[in-house]
Length: 238
Length: 99
Image (cartoon, rainbow over all chains, first blue to last red; front, top):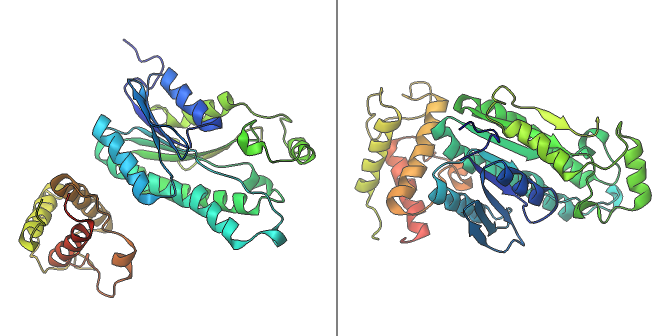
């Protein structure tokens, strides 16, 4: 039977899977036939025929390795990694402590790199893999008040492009999806007037949906996307 | 599980080398793996190290990352030959303790 959904039998890993975009991605890929492993700090451990969810702090390198090994023991294949876990912290630069930057880089950049490195070790044996990292329109828009978030995601963008080059010989593609603002918990602390000013700068002056983000992630995750690597796809017309 | 001996680890490295780089002659234990006259190019060395990590975990049940901060900051690289790599692998497995 043709694999009309595109991910039948594939193993897809998603970080930050407990809510918002991450939870939506888990559902999206499960509906398309993938076995999905999701992890998050606040996720209650559970497992069924369609996948496994685990409680993992992605900034804990050893815990991430153990999670990936757990997936490998269950599946002996990893097709897709989506590094979705991330957090924004809003502050004017003059009031931003270095600890905010360190925390942002740990979560938004270093954790994604560690997970990518470990799955790439598995993927290279199969000569196939898809890594999709979530970035943000805060990078190209240079949003005031989001220095730590934008700088850490910019570092992730740069790292992803180098990864794309280094992992290309193994058949592994590495790309980025940068959602415009989505109605998730990440936006809860953003004042309404600030959000309105941000939306006014976008060609599409509205919030994006989780389903729209999932579609963009799926585009890079598909087997047919073999010539797409080192690319950044921003949503909302940015 | 008892800790592997240096002889065990050297045997593991030789085995992985021959599997990863089937078309190469196995270098002597103290022959350089790095530098201009080395038998491996940089990508082959990357593949060899990654395969050693995987093989060590499969055999001894301990996850190891050979290219860690300590390895990179040592004045003498653990990756310079098979003997030094076996010693470093033994250190990491010893720290992790028995499986």
